[in-house]
Length: 338
Image (cartoon, rainbow, N blue to C red):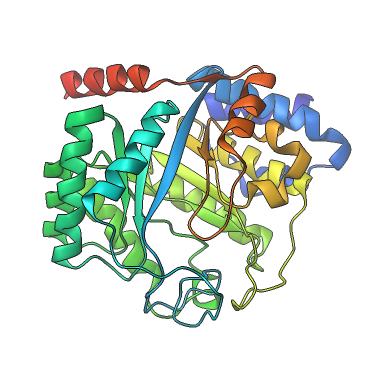
C-alpha cells in the first residue's frame, strides 16, 4: 500500500512519475490490484469526487474511409461487414441528441469516418450543432478526422465545445498501426483544436501489440499535449481487420493501465472507453476508481452494454452521475472566468 500511495501523493503534488515508477504500475502484482486502485482513487477523488461524466457516441458517417488503420472496421483495408452511409442529416443528429439528453448524458459526441471532413460535411455538422445547442444546451464533442485551421474555427463558432482526435498509440509504434497518415498529422490537428479554443480530447487504444514502454509513452505524450479529456480504449479485435484475433489484454492489466493514466494525468478527465465490456468484463466497476468518465450505449461499429445496465453499474458502485445541468453550470463558470 505504501508504494502505491506514494505514487498517488506524487501525482497530487504535481510531480512526475519516473520511468521506473510507471513500469512498476503496469507490472503491479495481481494480488496488489485493490491497493493500486485505492491509490488511484485518492487522486481521482481529489479532483472529481465520486462524480462520473457520461458520454454518448453518434456514428454520423460510417465506413467509406480511405485510411488504413489496422484496428478499424471502417478502414479501406477492412473487409468487415459494416453499415456504410454518408453524413447523417440534421434530423438524425438531433434525434441522437434528444436520446442523450433524456439519459442525462453530459457530452454528445458526433463522430464521422474519413481522413477529414469536406466543407459540405462540416456545414452539415455545424447546422446540427447550432440547433442542438439552442434546444438542449448540452456539451458537444466532434470527431471528424484531420482538420484545417478554418474548419476548427468554424466548429468553435458553431458551439462545438470539444474536439476528439486520438493519438491512438505511441509515436514509435504508429507505423505498425497505420501508414496513411503520420503521428505528427494527429498532433497537428490537436494543436489546431487548441488554437481554436476548443477543449482538446485525445486518447489511445491499448492492446495493439505495443510494448509496456509504448503505453507509458502514450500517457506521457497526452500529458505533454495537455489533453483535457483522455479516452482509454482497449482493443476489441474485429474480424476481417489486420488486428483480427489479437487478444493480449486481461481485466487486471486494463485496470493497471487506467491507474497509470490517472497518476500521469491526475487532473484530467480519464474515460474508460471502447472495448471495456470485452476486456474488463466483470471488473468494469473497478475501472471507475481510476477513470471518472465513461461512454454509454454503442460505439462506432461494436455494441456496448444496455444504457440501463451502465447506469445501474455506476449506481451500484456508489458513483454519482454528473447531470446536464451541472455541466451547463460548470461551462458557464468557465466562460465567465475567460
